[in-house]
Image 1 (cartoon, rainbow, N blue to C red):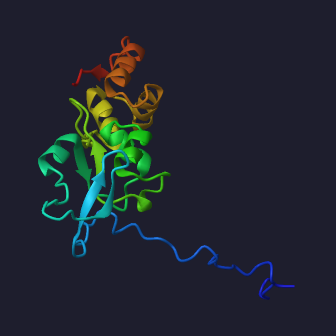
Image 2: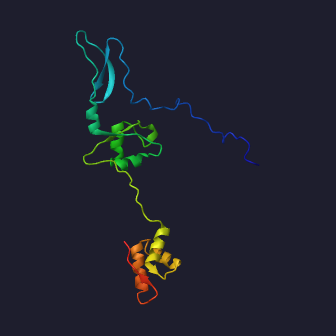
Image 3: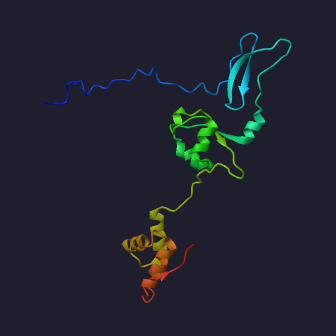
Length: 191
């Protein structure tokens, strides 16, 4: 019987008993203005904000976090679709625990993390970015060996390169050793 029928054990059910999926997009938004006769107070131990009534005759305002101090302690990283949690940890040389603590989230799902991420700044550590290296292609390496060793066939040049893990200078040295007694091959050093 073909698999076209709908069996009760094959129907996917959406788990809604825990409520809708949560979005963490608004985590870094500023606090809303407090109601009348109230003000925001930050608990230094838990780093959480709470509303308290204003005392009469005394003006108390919310604690202002110094932005210049925050930039000294943290680097901001804008999350891109290609970023991974481990990739960010490796790039900035921080442990996963440090990254989670700085951004106050758990797990390794980068989609649940606040955007931009706060990366703890360490002394003498900058973000490591990949620098493209212009390495010659395999075809260019074969041509280099052929130009250095006149009289070698293309398959021989490729074999010398494969035997030397595609190192051109080592391949030329091997060709020189193999054909040192033969007069038909002239070997010149490159690089």
